[in-house]
Length: 367
Ligand code: SAM
Ligand code: SF4
Image 1: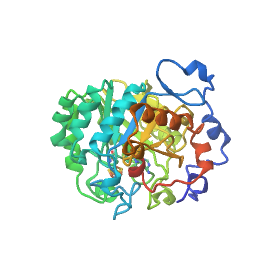
Image 2 (image 1 turned 90 degrees about the vertical axis):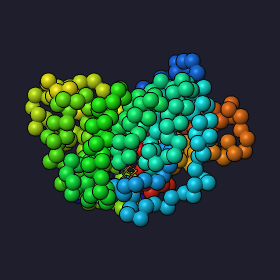
Image 3 (image 1 turned 30 degrees about the horizontal axis):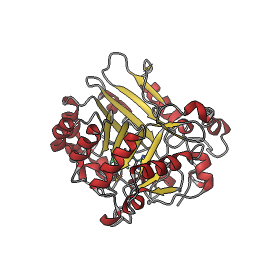
């Protein structure tokens, strides 16, 4: 698979990522705390003193859309159902993660709303004492799920939608469904779910002229629009086509259209967050590829087949499903999670230099 280092895109926003030392240096903001200073309570830590209280769990690999940057029309080589974590195994892992100090969960996939036990899983996470239980979904099946999800205790939802134009929606997802996603979004915004955000993968000559339309969605609703850099995790390599648009350029475009936009506060992954004066919502920019926040990453990722991925750009995987099947105790599973995170590479650039991506699509990593 093409890696970022060899990406031949000649129109790469004018950035040579391999050579641009400022960009690379900006990932080195890692605070090398002595490990002892991070031994606060029961938290999972790594050799650089980072602590991990946040897990993203991929509930499946399958999806009802085929976004061109994520998977090919025919899908990827999906694992057989038997290789995936069962509902009971996911619940067990949630409990072990919670015992090990994890307080925030995001369910992702694949498409998490295709999971038959999604509501029970949210209930389980809330019941286990997880404070923040969020989900990332393509929104296609959201309409009927909003109320049960809220009733189960979901505290946040990110809806992925890259365009507000019907034809472009079909082009990017290779399926119909814009109206269903918009309806799901409206219902989510009308519901008491505390946090509603929209993930927009930003692509040159695809949606970069829609900034204004997206930001107008934040006028009356407390919605955060998150413009995300395209990442090279697609079997079809849209990556090679010059669609990449870097975070700095996205910010320039946003400022060009809304010169009076103000800086605001956001989450750790939101590189920059802005607010148009008088608008209810916000806009965030996520440097997913340029990785300026990568060295401060606080995420544990669990793939649908039960492997820990300690970095999106690393090939190392730690097999929790096998441990569970071999009868491991909670203590042993917790130890393996700690071992996996201890070995987390310093940042995504270091990880990438150590190997290739073993997985074809974000659906297999848990985006
Ligand atoms: N199916 C759900 C969805 O689309 O929201 C959850 C899984 S999806 C893999 C999670 C997020 O990853 C989505 O917001 C999607 O847009 C993003 N994503 C997938 N492939 C990507 C890529 N190559 N670059 C950047 N973001 C990507
Ligand atoms: Fe499915 Fe999400 Fe991938 Fe799109 S980004 S194909 S909705 S998993």
